[in-house]
Every structure is written in C-alpha cells, then in structure tokens.
Length: 239
Image 1 (cartoon, rainbow, N blue to C red):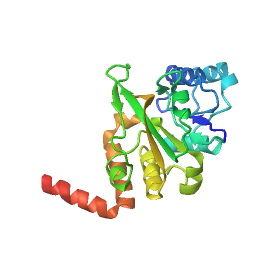
Image 2: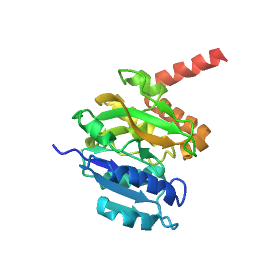
Image 3: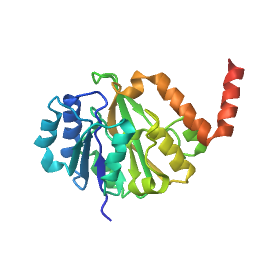
Image 4: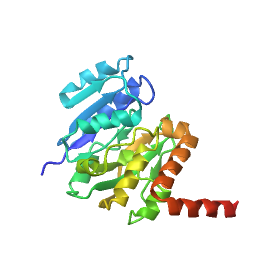
C-alpha cells in the first residue's frame, strides 16, 4: 500500500517567509518522493505566497487564510490529507537530512505511531540537542509525564478518524492531548533511532512555558484523574 507524508506549515510567527523556505527546501529535495505536501498558511503578506508558488510543482495543495489557532490550521491539513501517515512541520522546522524519509520508510513501518529522534536547536540554529523517546514502551505512565516529539512522529491518518482531530480549545497542548487519547486507545508504535527533524525554539511552545504546563495539567486531570491526584500530592510532599 502506498504510504504518503503530509507535511504541514503553520505560520506561528507571523509572516515567516524565511522559515517556510527552509522547511519547504528540506521536504521537496528528499530522495524519497512518495508523499503529498500540503501547506496551511494563516494569511501571510510578506512574500510567503510567492515562496509557495515557486514550489507549487511539489506541493499538492496550499491554503492561505485566517485561522483560529495552531490546531485549527492543523485540522485543516488533516482534512485535506489522503496519505497513510501525517507529519507536521511548522515554519522553520525542517527534515534533518535529504535521505531521512528513505531511511524511515525503507523499514516498511506499519504501526499507528512512528516515533523518531528530534533535533532541538536555538533560534539561530546553535546548540543542537537530541530529544528522544527514552523508553522501549510508550504506555499510560510514560505519556502522563512526557509527550512524544510532534515534528518527529508520523501519525497514521486513520488515528484521527478513530480518536478525533486536535482539540482546538487548547492553544499549545493539542498534540499532547491527541497522543494521550491515542495511547489510551491502545495505539501501536515503533521507535526509530533516526533523527527525523530539527525543531526551532523560536516557536510558542518555548516562548510560553507556563501555558504549556497549564494546558498539560488540564489534559492530565481530564484523562488520568487518579495519576494526577497522586502526582500532585507527591509534589506537595516534596515541597
């Protein structure tokens, strides 16, 4: 069965043509070409659309319009995807090497979630560190404490039919919320020790860490009330 990649662009930092250019270049120059590339833009006016049009021969579809937030835009991407797997790259994120998709799909993945390594770098590209899923088993205990690296995790398209789309009421933890639902729903997974993508710290998830923590606790309390209560009591005792 043909497997495709949905690569997704969301203008988190308004009018980020330079970041988008870097993202597009890393996708369209892959040695692996069995993908569909979908770009969702929030209505940029800085030349972003020209950048998209310059690469339209490699882009299946693009949409540029106002949205109500990150996950509203991501859901648009999902609704326009037809491939077997989805991967979400924000503007400025990029695939780590030009043959990384070949490296992943040469393994003929079949699990619901394909988790790879993610390179995290400063805004200027310096001080890269590798984020990994440091366990052989992704279970409820793991996902309660730690999320999966969204830009380095392929998500089987069917999972969104099974568990629903991203929760648009969340501003920054919608991907964490989805991963929790998927793991609770017994999603299968494979972990590859391959650096798939590079993530830039200039995005909202690093600019507003308090919001990240607040929304993650909302998700934890909703899906794991007993874990949440125990964890909260333990933290109080430690203090």
